[in-house]
Image (cartoon, rainbow, N blue to C red; front, side):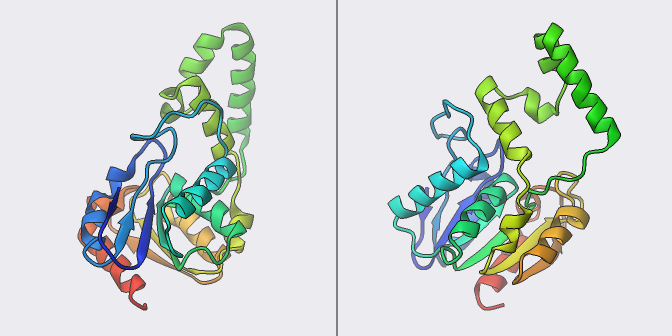
Length: 230
């Protein structure tokens, strides 16, 4: 999907989502810029993946997509999983984006407590005896909805810590997190990324993990202000 003219703005959607999640931002920003919004492989209208992709694989795909779409140092606006890909991509291509906007950004692996480790141990034990039962009753609800290849990809993605990539970001970055986000809480992911990314600023929006679609007007206002010199 590509709309509008002017500076390039590239949207990267979240996991199990698609480009249409940015509907309000695409309609607003395409009045001022050339907006491009793809579906990641395996999501939306894109073809399914046939092997388990890592964040690095999606980063390589993004590099090829930007070149094929002839995007010129775009502003990247990334949500959740899209932020993982953006961080990985920009850590290896520090001059590839004009600015970066992350909303509900993920990519921090937190220390695993004893409860988590016990559950992993139980899962591995049950899987040896009753694999179908283990797959049905262990893991997050999001994980249990995925087909086998996507499950393996999901495990690769969520187990990669991207804090070192965040330290390599050199473009100006705006972090927009919802005050009711329980998936990537501002007090955790937001503040950590703000401390890691050198030229970053953290702002809190009303709403949850999809604050950009729940309250698009103030979100779009913050984005427009940032893109025009703030």
